[in-house]
Length: 356
Image (cartoon, rainbow, N blue to C red):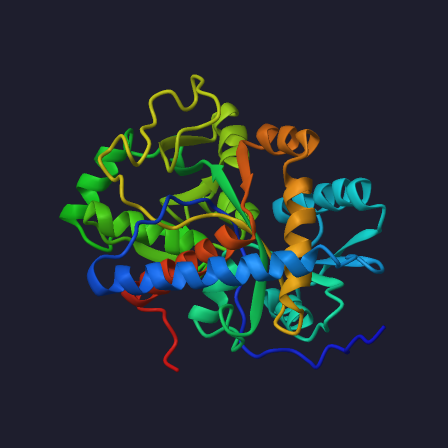
């Protein structure tokens, strides 16, 4: 079985951090016509590949789930649960391989260099997109990879301040930000999907924050508790934990939380504040090398749809505050492209899109 070796580190890289987003809308005019034609072509290709996939026996060997993050983080823990369920579903060994070096560039390169056997699958999040958009890596998610699965995730991210902050509500913070552009220090992982997500909301709200590097979740929490930043965005589990302890205050949520309690009952969603057209999404992306035949990619999709539909995995994700919905092959192709293009557009308005 032919496998290629990792060819080396890609140059500048970014951290892959996690926070969720909204939904996409269809284009208009000639663009819509072109999009419809493209969708028909995608559907036709998917049907043809699906017919061939019936004769494919994947996996033929141990499967590595390549995670662009260190062990113990949120993405890693989900990948390990997926590996457990996938082994139960297929009988094959699924092994989580953490390649956080270079902020994820090594993981991306490992999948890029894979061969037609598709035994190195990328277990990625949208920072896979932002790394390319910002110039951290040079391999193009649309041209240099194939998407096997787009797993939509409905999850809540919170806008948070320190418990003793002068901002008691989100409207107070937004009013101050409108009066004093770029004066409120917002800590985030610069160039990450969280940064893109917050900037999309800020643009919709007509405000400009002063973004500073705050690192990953633990570092951002330390920064806000230490008074080094004024506001940040945190995942539901992290925000709720510190809010229960009385350390932070939740001002707003990107989407409706799985549960409401005294710590988030007064926090409006973006939609409740009138920002209903936010389009950044927060999927899990199962990605292969472009060397993998389409019929194999379809077979991977079929296997992973079963895995992500498993009640045990769905219950696990629900406890983490996330509802998952795995898409079929054709829909995965469409949403993968649309989501990349949305992030690309936000990157351009954010001023971080690399010139190529």
